[in-house]
Amino acid sequence: MAEKKLIDARGSFCPGPLMELIAAMKMVAVGDEIEILSTDKGSAAEIPQWINKVGHEYIGSHEEAGVWHVNVKRSK
Amino acid sequence: MSEANRISVVVVSDKREQLQMAAMIASVGAVSGNEVLVFLSMNALRYFARGADIEAPAEGPVGELMRGKGVPAFKTLFEQAVSLGDAKIHPCSMAMDILGFEREHLEDYVGEAMGLTMFLDQAKGGQVWSF
Image (cartoon, helix red, strand yellow):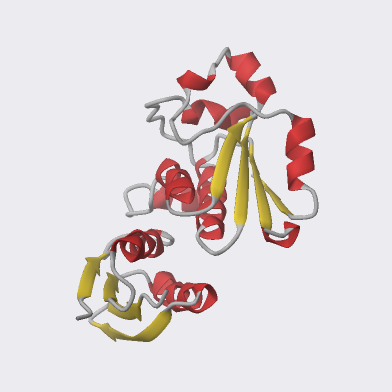
């Protein structure tokens, strides 16, 4: 069964959240989801672009009280 | 990999903003399907001495603001470019000679010394960024 991992990258600036996500992506199984928390608006915009470029699945993002929640799935 | 996916980054500055931008391009480039070659020379090389934790001076107001803001350290980003992506980092053989460095004086993620003939050959046909 697919699992969901949470990464708290709040307080880190670009490209810190992206690099944390990539490190986590290597640890999870194909099909697993990752939710990354970021206070960096640029990273919230860049992560979906990276996901689409390298061929993983972007599930969606939303912002809550200055924190972006970006959800992705490892697909290969 | 085709030459179109080659990104070469020449790093010579000892200034915080320059080192940070070079590290950002190298790390994001290396994890995005590109083959990245980083060439460390001149005033940049001493930061990569094994265990060196030297604070790079800011050259402007953004560099000052970056301090204590949670910006990833440039050395961490270069290391991640190698460990998480497809990057190779080489010191310039001339700068190695000037500083009296041997390979073992540098961080583990930095490779063997490279001369300009090989660097220019490997950079051929790809993007080249200089900081």
